[in-house]
Every structure is written in structure tokens, then in C-alpha cells.
Image (cartoon, rainbow, N blue to C red; front, side):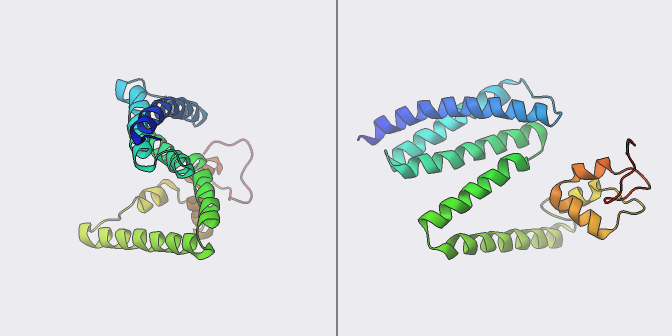
Length: 191
């Protein structure tokens, strides 16, 4: 099939997928207690960018199964980018299923160790970037300190609980009142 026709058709599908991603972002924002934005770039950005990316992928890959797979991850990327620009937040509800899908796909397409090696390599890269950023700019890099600072230091909230709150997300900490602990919070108290 002609790659230009695939690109045009897949670009139209990309616009619809981008609109669906925006709709999902609005629902996720409301679920998180955030106010979704209504500026033109917030409303029209995801459909337009997704259409452009899908058209490019359609032109490069043609009508193959790989096109669908790449498009799913491109759609996730667009949703994450615009949600992050809008709310300065990247949701685990979006990333963890995407990571699980990537793991399953990497196990099906490649040797079993390729996905693991890529994950370890990416982890080492981000560790290097965090250390280099801290060394060069004399401050933390990649947002780790901001997350740890959002976890309040309270009596009965030791390092183990702070690490658990960091891993699970700092929203868990807000439910722990002063004087309570992560294991035994005081009921019906507001932090």
C-alpha cells in the first residue's frame, strides 16, 4: 500500500486518538481533584500533535502491526507531555500500565534479556544524569528532592515510611495525622 495514503489515513486516526487522550486527561484530572484547563493549546494540542506523529509513523512504517504498537506508545507520550505541561504532574495511572505493556511487548518481540538490559541501562542513565546535575548545578536534579520534601517529617514517620511514601507517591502521607504513624494513623484526623 502507498505510504502516503497510510500516513493520511493514520493521521486522521491520530487526531481522533489525540482527542480521546485529551478526554482521558480531563477525566484523570477530575479524578485527581485538579481543574482541567480550557486554553486552546490544552484542548487542541493533543489531537494536532497526535495526528502529526501518527501521520509520520504511518509514512515510515506503512500498514504493519509495528505501526499500531508504536502509535500506542506515541499516544501515551502525548498524553504525558500535555498533562505534565498543564498540571506539572505525571500520573502513575498512565505510566505503570504503559510500562507493563512495554515489558510484555519486549518479552514477545525480543530475547528475554533485551528488555531487562534496556531497563537497567535507562536506570543507570538517569542515575548518571541525577548525579551529574547535582554536581554541575550544586542542587538536586530530576525532582527527587522535591518529592522527598513533600513528605513531611513527623514524629513516628521514620526513613522507612518516608521511602515507602516516596515509592508509592506522596499522597499517602497526607492521610497520616500528627502523632500517628503509617501503620497506625489516628482515625478521622486531618493532616
